[in-house]
Image 1: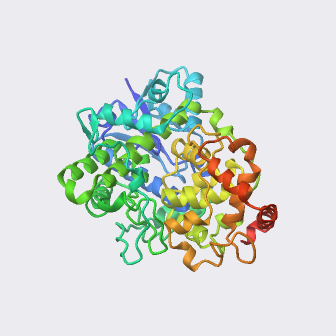
Image 2: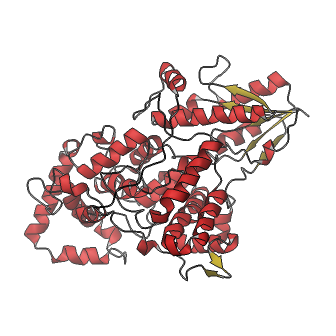
Image 3: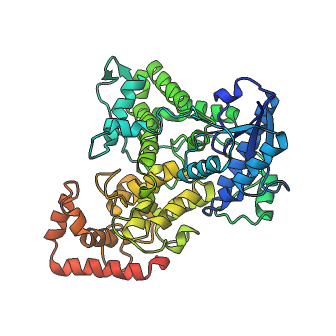
Amino acid sequence: MKTVKLILGDQLNLSHSWFQEVDGQVTFAMFEMRQETDYVRHHIQKVTAFFAAMRHFRDQIREQGHQVVYYTLDDDRNQQDLSRNVMQVIESVGAEQWGYQWPDEYRLDQQLIEMRKKWELPCEVVDTEHFYTSREEFGDIFEGKSSFLMENFYRKMRKKHDVLMSGDQPVGGEWNYDAENRKKFPKKETPPDPYILERDVSDIVSMIETAGVQTIGEINPLSFQWPISRAEGEKSLTYFIEELLFQFGSYQDAMTSRSDFLFHSRLSFLLNSKILSPREVVAKAEAVYLENKESMGISNVEGFIRQILGWREYMRGLYWHQMPEYAQLNYFEHENELPNYYWTGDTKMNCMQHAIRNSLDNAYAHHIQRLMITGNFALLAGVHPDHVEAWYLGVYIDAIEWVEMPNTRGMSQFADGGIVATKPYIASANYIHKMSDYCKDCYYDNKKKVGERACPFNSLYWRFIKQHENKLSNNYRMSMMYRIWDKYEEEEKNNILNQAELYLKQIDDL
């Protein structure tokens, strides 16, 4: 029976059972579409990477003998509507049924459900065969529980999948070495070289620009540096395992103006497009640790595995457990716009300048830059979580809603009121100075709360503490900060709050 099978742009998994045998009755359908380039304003490198990866995947499965109908963005056949494109392929090949893999974004899930309802045509929906967990497993794990503690989820994953385990106990004796993952990068150490690729993507970039797709960020079309194929993904993974993993855990929270990437793997695009499997990434990290226990240190490998087996799976599970209501949460009722320098990097705050320009130049920033610099500032500035979310979803090459939304709305902005995090991730300049070298050359003084050139993070931090006292003062993880605030003299409190209000009025000029 002739069948059309839809492959979405983040379903580039060569190991999927669909591709293990060639079936002349099956036609695979892939589309570059404006609905995907336009639902937020994306980074030019992100759009380019997905289109380049999709085209490479198309060529690979064609070489295996599979039939593929592929619409480029400028293809005359492309109606820029998923329903009409799929039906057009069905009719062109005379298919009697169709199928797809479960999408990972709620909006696409609903769109495909509507297509199934509308068409009187048999449809088979299958798993992506990528994640450790099913959509429903998160709910099963936390059934009857009032909170969703990631650590509990992570331990269950370690046990179930026998990762870094010795019998029923964790290798090394501890489940979590997060306390050892917070070192500042030493001044005298030389940052490692990143793994850099180069390819010419000028044809794709030209097509995107000609089509009028609105993008952000920078790109060098003649020297595109992101891996987009299975072979390049394997090389990137090998480089990380052999050259960077041995110090990843120690410095995973560190920030420095001397390196955009430090020891971070930058494998997230490969994972989120399913070019690489989380199982193979975790297995290789675990294997190299077991072979090099003495020299590597368990905190390095555990910290990395926790991000994938723990946090990544946890975020996906929570997303499907909480949607669609989760997308509307705004616990602090923030309403402000993003400051204009989120789109340019033109700010006198050195930490923000580095984090934003890294994002605009590379479509990337590591998790502490996202959480404790750009996310922290947006939260302190009272920006509406919708605006923060749209920026994160657009600017980062690895941002797909299932992973971006709970990280942004939950972890970064605390807009869910504590579903993800036990407290808001806010910090003054003291934290930034502790974890980076950004304060050293900054226009602002990280030690000053008020007065000329006082660091905006300081007064905005205490304004946030005061403003949301009714919602946070009973949070046991925030109680110490309220005790500190209460010890300030009234005049000092007023000066701090006045400084914060002045900065909010001048927010675009900081």
